[in-house]
Image 1: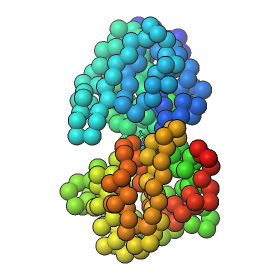
Image 2: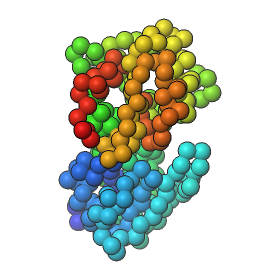
Image 3: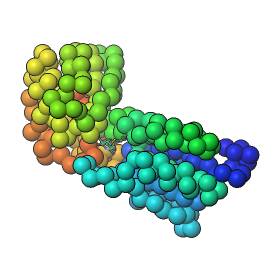
Length: 251
Ligand code: SAH
């Protein structure tokens, strides 16, 4: 950010806070948080990360819980504009990466439409962080040549997803927000020919001290999900079995 950008109308830094472990913040994120005059943050941002900000910084929680939207998205968008117009350095702090299932795009659109200067600081998305800490490489020459990130917030019956193309092998699937939809995910993949024994993993609280990994085959997915707590990622694909060999965290 240049001084020119900062004058008059303030500035918004859209910062990805990573999946939980505060040491996974980028240097750029760390500096922005320390400099923040206003912090607008979500539920998935850990206390340790918030503690890095100045005591004087105004902290505004706009987190959402599943089926329980605390602050509607358009109000968050307006809040960012209003705080920037006060001439403040605003940090919009989100879990993981703001542009991956984080609605960061919509917030930037509002800022752009209102001529508010902004920057985007990428974060480690849960799919990268949680799988690394679970010892599950997303791609591997022997297992998967591609990877796909999918939202578990599906329309009824998952009709908005091309299940046939997902149910291939040599491919890793990572479902965000998928716990509740896991019976549908399991059924749709099975119906499209994926083997009952295809390895799956559920990573709960990835990269945090409380991280837990549940492992099984596709046929066990819904059952495993019923034991897991949010936030959790579902990984489907042959790479998931590598957890047994490569698990290194909390050992
Ligand atoms: N922008 C975030 C994703 C927000 S959607 C990112 O890039 O990571 C919220 C979903 O992310 C959760 O339902 C869960 O599926 C996943 N998630 C976020 N943090 C996680 C963590 N520490 N461990 C496992 N899954 C996580």
